[in-house]
Image (cartoon, rainbow over all chains, first blue to last red; front, side):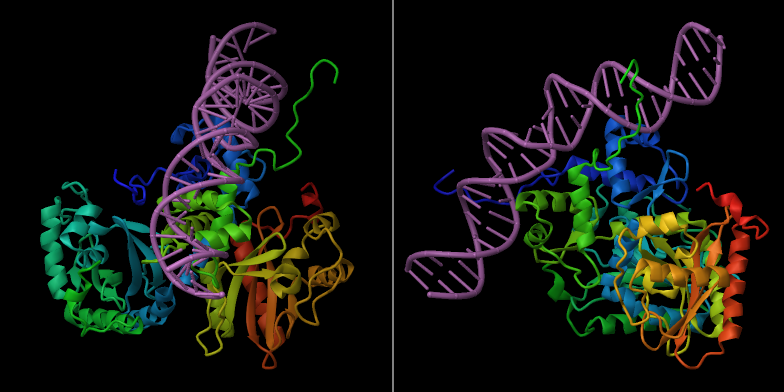
Length: 273
Length: 273
DNA sequence: ATTCGTTGTTTCATATATAAAACAACGTTT
DNA sequence: AAACGTTGTTTTATATATGAAACAACGAAT
């Protein structure tokens, strides 16, 4: 335009995508709990990538230790290399280190399985877990993902978002249902979240799954923002609700304090983010 | 070179390497417990990749959820996406599921931290852990790697290899030392391994680290080969050695049986691999 | 103030990764 | 046994990812 055209960061995030890398990562993600072994042709069809390209990508992944050949077949499974990645991540997160003893105590006090999860877009990802010793223990494994809007754990995290942020996470109004309690629309979700936000915790006897109750509360860091959530789960019916809510709130309060959260900080201050 | 040239698999493994993918993975691996935040220029220097290329690769990794920008800085840290990968891997391994209760029992019986590890080349990788409740608990986290030849845990796995296989793992005779007990040469290692193999377990009061003792035994699958190893660790000096050896052997025997290992199978039979 | 070395981002010629096509080898079906 | 569809691997023209160079913007050093 005028004299100097100021350089501003490119708008479209896809501009600098390296296809080889992106597709290689897509291949890795094709492996999951259900499908632990996959062959090149199968992946090629599924991802719509030419056979010869998939062949080369998988050779690279094998060479790098992220995939390994299944004994005498020509199929692959995830290699031990991926393990290091995941755990370096966990080890790098301060909150996971601090959470473990707190979850253990919560488990001991309540007798229920307790979890810490963080949000990744519309998913809640389980990051630390302390399993109940009782017969009814949690079967979720670390890394498991659940839809945020349809879980108690997710609700206390979403409740911290501004309207604009929430809109960004859920661009469309219609929300997928998982039980008859799941809000079907964004406005319906907002209403629920407002309650969670003012209450400071969320409770339900059977929100995501029938027969399984949950109490969750948010964890905050020094900025005052919610960065994770802790919950306990129990079998519907046999709950001294109020007592357990206090325990969960105590746990999140302890953890938040360890993360330098100061309750005194006025909420207004964070409206810059 | 007569009529038809038979097509045999390419000899050099690097022939079909996709540079974009390989380098992207190298970038991911640059992040570890010590260095949780890295910037593009730093990585470019370290890996010897042009700045502009690293820039694009990191954008791709961010876009794919494997890296995320550190708050307001231009540095990155590992993204939550890597977590799923690591845990899908664990979930896909039968042995980890089965090992957990066995390690817990071993821990309860001995009062010591117990671990299951598998070998990746010259490394032992910790895969399942049951921490002692005592003040002296294991601080090893899942995914941690230790040199196989310098650990008791590694020795019981290496002891199952044939001479040729061992040679393949350690192409050179000189071995890195970690304590005065570490064998310095391949022949010295072989001698130690021979003892471990006939004994069926390995013990030391301070093999890898001074003051920390360990007892380890091998886990076998239906093929009869050693696929993992279990250990307990303790503080030097206060050990009723024999009693604990029995416990460890019981644990590995239980786990091996669950993996359909039949002790009756003659060792000769597996010499095909 | 000015220079210098960083850094984040962009551009562009060209080295190179890719997709299509073909090959060899296999297992099914006919 | 012939024909067919798979699959693992290789080749090669060409579309494209890459590395070098350059820009803008910053901070530190002079």
